Amino acid sequence: MTALLLPLLAAVPVMAAALTAILPWRLPGRALALAVPAITAVTGLGLLAHHRSTPVEVAHVGGFVPGVAIPFVSDSFTAIMLVATGVVATLALLFADLTGEFARSRYFAPLALLLLAGSNGALLTGDLFNLFVFVEVMLLPSYALIAMTGGWRRLGIGRLFVVVNLLTSTLLLAGVGFVYATAGAVNIAALAGAATEDGRVAATLGVVIMALCIKAGAVPVHGWLPRSYPGTSAGVMALFSALHTKVALYAVIRIWATAFDLDPAWGRVLLVVALVTVMWGAIASVAPTLGREVLAWQMVSGVGVILAALTVAPPVGQAGGGAGPGGAIVYMVHHMVTIGALVMLLGAAEHVYGTGRLDRLSGLWHRERPLAVLLVIAIAALVGLPPTSGLTGKLEVLLASMATGGGWGVATIAVVLVGSLVGLVAMVRLWREAMWGAPMTRYRPLDVEGRRTGWTGLDDEVRVPARLLLPAGLLCALSVAMFLGYGAVAPEVDRAVAGLIDTSGYVDAVLGGGGAGGGEALTETTVGGAR
Image (cartoon, rainbow, N blue to C red; front, side):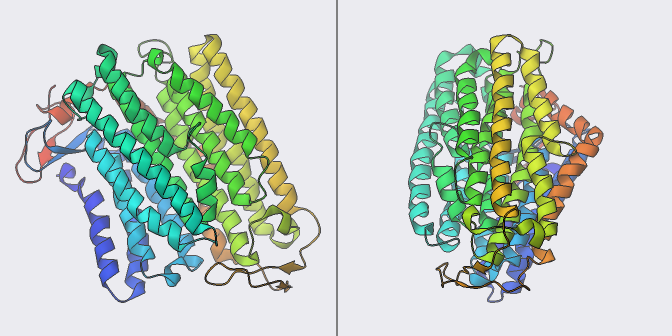
């Protein structure tokens, strides 16, 4: 019965989006836009508990035989991602509501729900072609969300976002076609170990991974992310940071674990890309004058850390062989929480004071003490200081690098530590510009269309209301809780890593025959089982 619920995680947001688009009232749309991602998070928690006894659940849509049917698959890794994306998406949409995004357009809620539907489908699908389909479902509403939110640059960055993602989607579709031509299947379970056995399959899957890395914002095709994300509203940027790049990274981890068996011999090129991405993003984050652009470059650097943790670890079977996926998972969840909090904190100041430029913000430490305290916690999490999830995430990545040993492990440790130090410099600069200095005397508000309306006096009563700090405050509290309560989180991560290291249960459940989890069809019952 649990398996039958999996497709609903993609179907319910689509139905909710249709309902909110049809109804003439905005209140139901706002309620559904907040309730659906919250339900996703709660469902993810339920799946985590369920996977303690049933490692893999599968629903075969369409009533076809396993391997041909459209599979929706959930394991501990999937459930963790559903919880993380659901929580951050709920709070990002709450922030968007508090800043008036829902009031500006009645189509904001259905577009956000369609984005969530694509995200959930991409996390749950067990098929490369349907991964492409759900990624496109994510992108279509994203184009509209960029065009209808943010400042005057939104149309220009919208064109950049569209062009880059259309070309990348073409590359992804071509890669999926090449995989089918060489392997005869696009079902991820059917591709288990195929890349290590056939160089042609490895090459074609490399095209798929390359497209996903572009969508994640990895060097060298990364410039679209720091140019486009800061041009949207803060709420939309927080939503994108939780869904777009992380879904792409989830797919990379899943393909790497299943098809490549986490073999580091195939990952040295990807590791080099990851290390360059870490340093490039960190160094570039020092210079921007727009606060959210600093965070966008830190997102790029974080993508590199996640990929480095995944590809540097020793082979499966050796000591520390599971450290890589574990570090990637922990750091990815931490990064979603931390970046979301930082974006919403700077977005709250931007909403009230009319600018996100660091050279136009000053003295907020004295004027906005609650915001400043939360910003200290979020910055500590980003650079990896206690008592936040940043320290846990960085330690997991460093442990994966130390388990490898040799030149690659040392290089990874050095790059991650130097990248963290440079990131600290960028955050200190952001803090100095926005929090210290003389009190602001004037500010420049934006009208509804995002245009400048001129300078006006800064009233003493102008303050960031507490309600705008609530979403970011909850994420900061979650980061601290992840650090203090890591003993409760670690077993769930261990189960996720075990499923990535030993994919036999995943393969058995998807391809049929009674293995680790039942596979139930929506129109005719099939049984998950052996390969």
